[in-house]
Length: 72
Figure 1 (cartoon, rainbow, N blue to C red):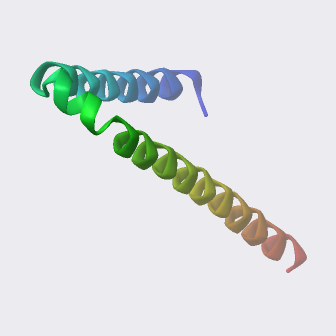
Figure 2: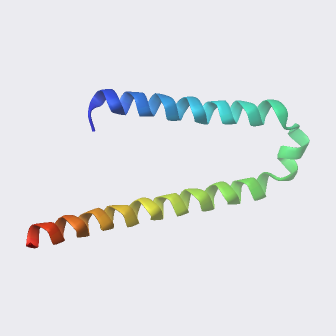
């Protein structure tokens, strides 16, 4: 990936992520966050694992396409 595209996508992703976290921190009461901390944590961990598995799947899919094109 070219450096310019990388910087643009990284900046956009960081801006979105920080906006979401600031929104949650500002609008949700601390008591509510403390009460549901474990549930929120579990959802975040499961989401991260599912996303990582998706990336691995996509990597294998691209590799298999490349191998099939090379064998033709």
